[in-house]
Amino acid sequence: MPNDRSNLSSDEIEVAYRTQARELWAIFYAQCSDPERAMDAVQESFTRLQDYSSAAGSEPIRDMRKWLLRVGTNWLRDCARRKVNSVKQSEHLDSMAAGQETPESILKRRELNATVREALKSIRPDDRTVLILRYALNWSSQRMGDVLGTSPQAIDMRLSRARKRLAEQLEEMWITHE
Amino acid sequence: MSKTGMQKSDSDIDATLVAFFRNEVPAELPTTDAGTDVGKTVAAWVSLQNESNSIAERPTFGSPDRPAGLRAARLSVVGGRVNASQWSSSRSLSCVFVGLVTLVLTAVMLVGGGRTKVATGVEVVKTNPDVTIPDSADVVVAHAVETVPNNHPQAETTGFQFSKRFPTEDGPVELRFKLRRYTIQRPPETEIELIIPELDIEFFDLQAEPLVPAPTTRGPQE
Image (cartoon, rainbow over all chains, first blue to last red; front, side, top):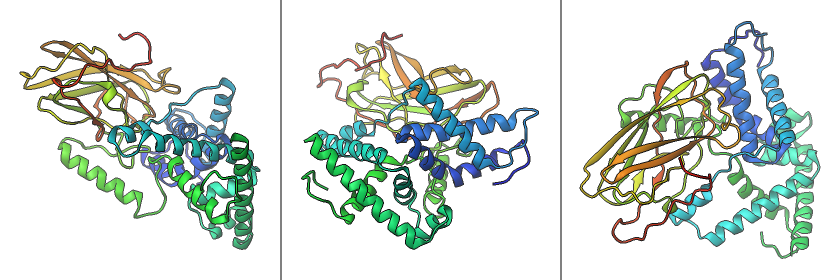
């Protein structure tokens, strides 16, 4: 989103958030494999955008998306260096309190999710990218192809291979675990 | 998908990933597809405005179903004793404080019995387990003003916390609120109220249940 002004209105920033936050989250998630940390990075980048935009004498932001990406990525890097812990959501406690799930099923689901998260971290970044674009953003093969500069057919092929490699990774992890 | 060690099919992995990302993607993230989350956001916001009858602000960053830009935490405590072991916090608020913001917390305690609506994304911890809300109390209304410094050191890592003591006939009841990811943008020194909807807090019957101390892990209480 090209923008040569330094002072962005709250409405402009809000529109940017609504249109870009999800994708930014996916990109940050691909970098850190931590949903909370990725969300923090999104929030941090938009907060800093707000601060920067309202500061007197700021340089114009020519590409808001790149700016947000850079800020969030740098923030993630800083976090990794400082080993900052994110606040963890506690919806599993809510589920328990509300009696929606048994503790056993919650633990089982959390264990499965943790395994999938680890498997995603261990596969190739290219594979991880297509899987996140498809499953976190629900992007079509056409849209992914447009963004990644390839055909929908090639995307389908990449997705299939990525799923296969993820399955192999999960198999390996579960066999090792058991 | 079971953990049998057998080779999983493409559709197995597909189902696993769908379920995985359903949990993984934060619910507060907006979608760019018109008519889905955007519509819900607007509906939730309008509904809340009507309900509170005093809200005139728009939701801010990341607040599709629980507008974080709301201005009052209305704590309705219905009966019984506040017991942290009986409930848990819901998802975190999405807010970012810029500048010096003053929170005005309005708490309304209604004695009656049953469940309590409090706040999304707020942990409430009763720090004085010996204090009870007396049956004779009708409505206890308490106001607290908290000052939130810009870039609070806890904001990044553990979330900002503030607490409120409620005077009751049996002594003060302290409730602790933990917020994170503020998206409220306000000029410095602006007074705001946080309305934090939809956190159910379970209360056990004052007479029937044993007292369980609040399971805090945050060190000595204030």
